Amino acid sequence: MPLVVREIEAKSVLNPSKIYDYCVNPYTGCEVGCVYCYAALFMRRYSGHSEPWGEFVDAKVNAPALLARQIVRAAKRGTIWFASVCDPYQPLEERYALTRRSLEALAGRDWPVVIQTKSARVRRDLDVILRIPDVQVGFSIATEDEAVIRLFERKSSPVAERIEVLREFKAAGVPTYAFAGPLLPGNPERLAGLLAGAVDRVLIDRMNYLPAVKAFYARHGLLEALTDGFFRTQAARLAKALRGRGIRVERVF
Image (cartoon, rainbow, N blue to C red; front, side, top):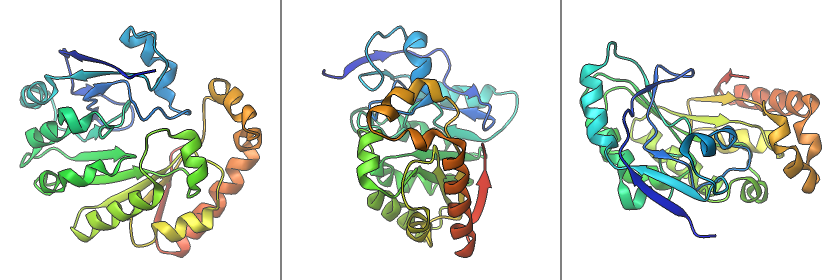
């Protein structure tokens, strides 16, 4: 099914977040289409779309200009997260550059920024990111197993490319991190080895919405990966391997 794309005018783009102070989502919907994405549980209803998750995106074409106005009017300064319910560097970003132009609105301003993506397209914006005084760039990397990645994350960048970009950003002086969640089947020690020298910290998280994805896991013989035992074992192995390489570990589950 072809991707359904709409151009819309957002009423607000700088919104409160439960994770950071604010979040900015330049798009509603996400063509990366991760099977486990929690946004799939509610974003179709919120957006009015009937298409399956991953097959619709609304581009908030006024997002950069709106953000520039909202940061001036905001009651308090706080950390801005790109993004909470979409990948800010999904393929449509090549056409619209809404994330890049939104970051440009923050360049030189005293607003901390945290970027989280699964796409190497973030590499394009290093020049803008370096102009943001307080910024972190991270990749979601739930496993080092590329076959598992292709099963769960339809249009994400290969793990090796994500690691490569993290190394480039770290070498450029940008603080980097990885979000290992929800933990997927793989080899935690190998993942830790790949992340060594590429990130300053790793956040480990688990799957907290099992009913929505249970059927998918069952079809692929992966139900064990939804159990408490799987998470405890994998998380402990990953944390131990990361700490052994001098990487700070944070658990957010």
